[in-house]
Amino acid sequence: MTLRLAEHSKDREQQLAQIRQSLGSRSIVLIGLMGAGKTAVGRRLANWLDLSFTDADTEIEAAAGQSIKEIFAEHGEAYFRDGERKVIARLLEGGPQVLATGGGAYMNPETRAAIKAHGISIWLKADLRVLLKRVSRRDHRPLLAVGDPETVMKTLMAERNPVYAEADLIVESHEVPHDVIVGAVADALAAKLGCDAMPAPKRRRKKVP
Image (cartoon, rainbow, N blue to C red; front, top):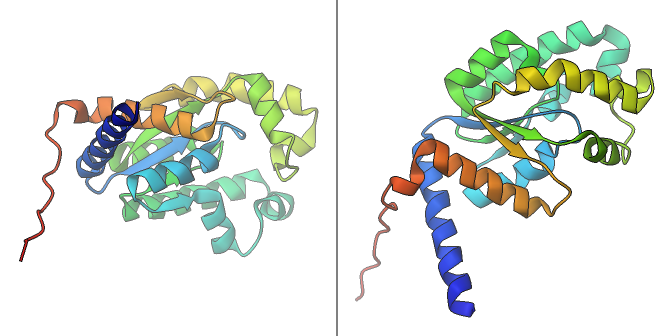
């Protein structure tokens, strides 16, 4: 049993090394609705791959000097979306990294084109029950403050899911430990990048005195 675990761990390490090598300067861009797990999964994925993690919403708030809730309240959604587009375009120049985007970011055609040019998009797809359970834990979502959360979420799913489906990869985000989802993302990336067919990067051997 111990030997099998060690072999599995070694295989995973080789897979992750191959993914890093294949990415080049591209970013792994997580998309999906609020509550899909983009930040939680993104942080763990970045740690697995030894890459930096960037949350687009956090960067937008830093650039604006306001919270997203405040930006929506003072300037409206259109103003926020324009700033979001500019910030994500700038962040994509800084790959490789794992980049988590806001739920509406991928709806912008310019942002989709920029992600396609500089990254690999992954839709973390979750069903309505899972999304509602997760978003109910926090009250900072501006779009959920305008009506019944379930009604709003159903509307967003109908509008956005067909566009999210254009992503390079789709990974189901279930109510399971985050590391399980991260493993599924890693496997999907490896298959997409052809890593399973690549030789593992050679490690330099230490000279023995």
